[in-house]
Length: 315
Length: 315
Image (cartoon, rainbow over all chains, first blue to last red; front, side, top):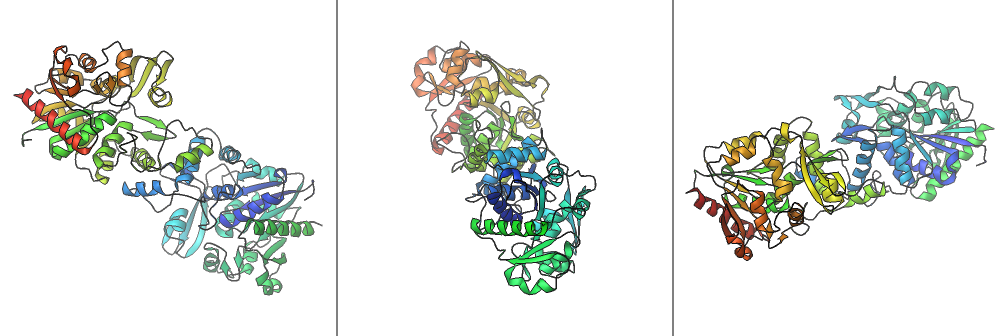
């Protein structure tokens, strides 16, 4: 990465967090801004919970649980057991360590913005790369399903994304302002690439694109926009992305990702095993690479690959 | 205990909680109301914390930690460690299980009174005896010390009660209404005794007595008021009660307790080892018994002794 480059990466939860960690491994702090979805932020038991910010923050700090996929490694559940004993609702699991993040964020939010809270939490975890929420304003995701209208976490966690999804709504997004960090990144004089991490496009990336002006700025871009597919073959690496593509009548493959991001992408990185799709995808340039990330080395390698791809497209 | 008896017991923290547990062992639920100090309730990290209600509730449920003296047995501290890592204040220890109580109480308080919240929490722990807060209104204890005016938990926990105490203030107590449970107990047609548990008189029992009308109703009583000394020899069984008696220029012994409760007591139960004090205490009748409570059997025995003593005084 030369000194004159600056990368803006859009990320949601777990898949996005993996590539975000890879990017932070290979880019210096001043050359990267990670903009994170807050559309699934919600309040529970009086706590402000930002699942995607936590996933990205924990991943960069190396504190994430690689097996469970969400939350902190070495997490314990004594709170949850006691809460259950007292008759508290237990459909959303709150780990003992994770609670510290929620409690502190909720407290700090009384005085400062989510952007500032995030910066504080990241600094305390020793992170040097910039992680910013997509907005400091409240955006609440709701989904229209075959079982009716559901709050996002109701659908995603309590109902395990089982209802058939018809439409997704981001309440408040029309009046939400993109965060200063997102605006600054979009206007950064050295901006050389915009990356869309392999997060769920419909649930995690769409809220960011729905913020006033963001989709338009991406469409008017002077730098390449490159996405990494969250789908390999006909399956999501993690989560319900494949199921949702099908429910929205999109092809359940990387092709569906290309359709979903229609008009936005200059490049799409898909898995090597999906090479056969190269000829059927219209629009973005396609590159194949192993996109499954297990170890930090995989994340780093994928980050280098996607940056390299973006650099080629920038020429 | 005959069917026609009803006992009101005033309790504070740990010492009071032990006798409270003993009373619950030997009295049926309908024959006992435990009125608990809320003067040291406070908010921390957005949580409403009621230390004395928790102590009594945990003691009756057999969930208390008998070694540490406060909080829950088998407690873990993963939250606290993570909170510290994030730079959160850690002078007040919040156990993982204990947090469940604080979080649920705080949430329930949005909709119902502390009396109702306490009843709910007790019911969920399977308790059948009535535990009621002294008031549903906010009362905040502050202490004037040689280091200035301190919030109670600042003095008691953060400064470990080390500053020299000059005076104690219960902010808001003049306008606080005794809880319905306290009023009902005082007016109970079968009321046969009022017990003052071996809690810190200055910090834990005084707030209850300072509620409008409570001291007057105790002074006008038709039933005996019996206290159990929290002091053995010249030492408190637990906590700073002895130190505080000295700082308030009261005798540092059960004699100081008698002085402090001057005009309120018909009986004072002191430790067998303090028999020599019997002749120097003026006012209440004195009985001696082993008052140190380790096991449940000790609590039960002391409860039977104090009830027996009150019964004698009632004749």
